[in-house]
Length: 473
Image 1 (tube, rainbow, N blue to C red):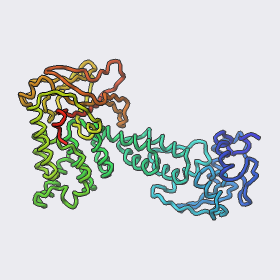
Image 2 (image 1 turned 90 degrees about the horizontal axis):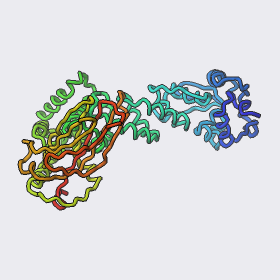
Image 3 (image 1 turned 90 degrees about the vertical axis):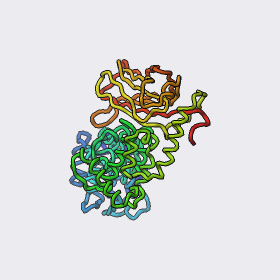
Image 4 (image 1 turned 180 degrees about the vertical axis):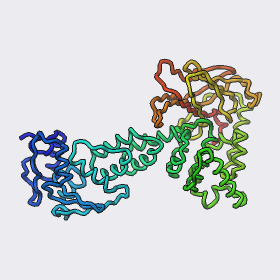
């Protein structure tokens, strides 16, 4: 007998499911082994389509042998189809009392499951394919996970993978974390690393939890589009929206409104740093991930940090000391000796900075606050990114600027993002040691003959390498 004659709908995928049912339900293709209360669904001709099976057996419930009730709705269904679900297969084949019941009440342990999603998930057992709209994917994934519908779970993952955006990324991340889709969780986290600093969506900032923001700010993979001070500014906006979730206003007013709110708090609390207040303590683990050493190297940034009174002075004092000693070492220690570079040390302590190449045209820039023996000019020319050490920087100590050679570790990453924020191109130099003499140039990245789309985001990690035995612990 052909599979088409046995399984309504006559599809090979249904035959594979039936083979699994022989184990789960204890019944063979000819119906032998069915329990007395289990009525075999009517056999359909091979010419009948999957749609007709869905309409007759699922929507109309013809020849139903079990009723499923949940969320104020009832579905007249068939055990032989339900056993494609690991949840029902276990229920019907074990010693559970539901195995012999004609009506089964389901309790929904997950608030993400609603009637529409349950209807879609149950209906998938009677169809070859199911349409999963992005707007419903989280609810359907929650339902499929409860019912152990592996095929539908996989389909939800594919939909999420194709529709990650500023509007969906947080809900997808939390759902993937809850329902075990590690690849989707990783992809959403990478999307946030790529886009957090460039997105202007207040709703996105509202949706990022404290734990998630802590992981993002701690990562050296975060695409910082200017300097570390911009990370602080982004955190200040985020914290304000967490504290004032009903705030409404134009995007351009968010920072000024946040500054005004923290200024009033500072005045009311007589200058107590906000992170030391009852409201602020919850945000301490996130702000501790800031790389303050690269904020205080820039005078305007250091003044802003002091005026805001968000970060406690007790955090800043040791950082000022460490950076002052680093400056003295850069000024007074001239020997270049072999240096052992620990990548984990670089990842946790490197300066994060970046820029955007809007068009394929010549441009150059500097990053402020990185002057320990370097005036590093970065340029883009003829599809190449070039580092050049200039000795004309007035912001750098004269003796330091004229030293014949200095060493840093760096890593340069490039990414092109589509309109939804997903990367369509990536390039990574990995960590390298850079030693440049005065006015020496080095081609860091060559994009010739590579298919790239503009704008291109350039993100770089730098770490000044002092002589072994003279670096701060």
